[in-house]
Length: 88
Image 1 (cartoon, rainbow, N blue to C red):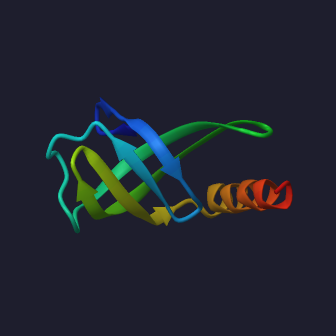
Image 2 (image 1 turned 90 degrees about the vertical axis):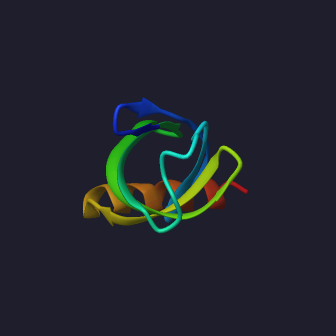
């Protein structure tokens, strides 16, 4: 996962946001930022850019909620998580 020119470890993600680690105070609660996510999905690579807002920080971890994301990418993400849930 990328924020600006920095790369962070993606700990977890969902259709509504991300949790990443490796942050050292570069973002604060309530701050908006742009990010790029690349994850391996069940049907190949899922790549998207979004704008997010920091919901909380704890240690080197940041939880952020998406607030601007392309509609087509959002639909693909929602469909991915629906398939994941269906397999459980």
